[in-house]
Amino acid sequence: MMTKAVFVAALAVHSAASATAQSGGLEIGTTRFYRGAGNQTVVDGFARVPFAVLDSLTRGPNAVAAYRLVLTVRDSANLQLVADSWTRSIPARLLGTPRGSSLEHFTFAASPGTYTIEVAVHDSATGRVTRAQVPLTAFAARPAASDVQLATGMRAAVAGDTAPRTGELRKGGVILEAAVRPLLTPNQASLGYYLEWYGRGLAADTAAVSVRVLKADGTPLVTTPAQRVPFEAAGGVTRAMVDLAGLPPGDYGFEVVVQGRDTTVSRQAPFRMGGFETVTLTAPPPPADKFEMMREAQLDTLYGPLVYLMTSDETGIYSSLTLEGKRSFLRRFWLKRDPTPATPRNEEQENFYTRIAEANRRYREGGAAEIPGWRTDRGRIFIRYGAPAEILKRPQAGNTLPYEAWKYSRDRQLKYVFMDLTQFGNYALIWTDDRREPSRANWQSLLGPEGVEDVARF
Image: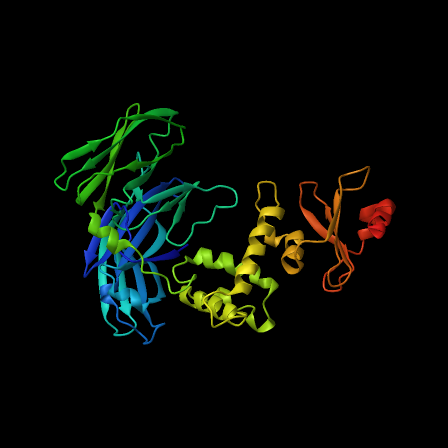
C-alpha cells in the first residue's frame, strides 16, 4: 500500500538514503528493508521539493502556493509498478525562505529486480514541471542488513503515542524524523541511525556495532567504540543517537559497521553539517497564529474535542481538508466564538482547552492511559458543565461494581452516575436526570436496590 506524508520546514529537511538523486533542486532518496514473506524489499522514499521551483498561486496575506507530485516506479522492462499522485499547498510567505523546501515520504514493496523511481513536481501556478529520478535495486535474497536510515530525531512508540506525526515515519517500535540528506546545525547536532540486522538467520548472535563519520573523500574522521549488541536468530534492530557537536560545516558520510560471528557489513548514508549561519536559516518564521506552524497531528488533536461544541453545519468537513484547509477551519471555528475579536486573546478558546487539559489529567482511562480524558464520559460532563458541586464515591461492595455520582447545583439540580463496568477504572455514564444525556435501561439493576437508594439520598 502506498503511503504519503509531508513536512514543511523553513529549510530543506534532512534524510539518510541508500541512493539519492537531484535535479533542479528536487532531491530523491531511498532506504531499503527486507521482508522474508514473499522475498520483498520494502522501500522508504523521500522527495525534497525546493520552494524555488514554486510560485504563489494566490495573492494576499493568506496566499498559498501549491503543487502536484507525481510518483512513478518502473521495472527494467519499463512496466509500471507504482503510479500515484497527490497535491500539496503551503503558505506562499515561505517561498522566499533561503533553501526552503517541503518533504514528501512514500513507501512501496518490490520483488527482486531493478527499478527506476521518478518524481515530477507540477507547480500549480505556472505549470512548470521539475523532474528527478533514481535507480533502485531490490534485494535478490536475504541480505545481512538493511540500508541505514538516518534521522534527526528518534523516539520509542509507547502506549498513547504510537502514531507518527507529520514528518515522521514508524519502523517497528521506533518513530523517526527522517528526510533527504539530514542537515545538522550547531544547535541541533545529534544524528540518529536505524538499521535492521538480518545476519544469516541460523542462530542468535552478538555483534559489535560501531559508527564512523567520513569526510567527503571517504577518509574516516570520527569513530565510536564498538558496542556489543545481541540479536535473535531472526535478526533485530540496532539504533542510537550520536552527538556530532563540533563537527566543521561540510558534507559527510555516516557509516554503521556491524561485525557478527561470521558476517561483517557496513552501511553508509550522507548528511550535512551547517554552520551558525544555518541556524538562522532554519529558524521558522514567527507564526501568524497558534495553528500556523502546527503539524497535522497537532491540529487533529485540537480538533477532536470540538465535537462537544460543533453545530450541525460544522460536522463532517474537517477530515476531508488539506493541511492548510484544517488550519483555516480551526481559525474560522474559534473566530465565530471569540467574545473579544478586537483583542489578540480568545478567552473562550483558552478556557475550552484548559478544561480539555484538566479532563485529560483527571479522567484518562484504559489501563495504560490509552483513552484521553476528554473522550471519557466523566471527561465529557466535566468539559461541558465544569467540576461538580459534590461527588459521591462508592468502591466495590458485594455484587455492586464501583460507581460514583456527581451533583450539580449552580443552575439547576442535576445528577450523573458513572459505573466502572470493566473494573479497570473505565467509568461509563449509566444514569442521569439530564435529558440531554442518555441513561442505560438497566441502570437500576446495575446499581442494585441499595445503590439506587444511595443515589436518591445524595
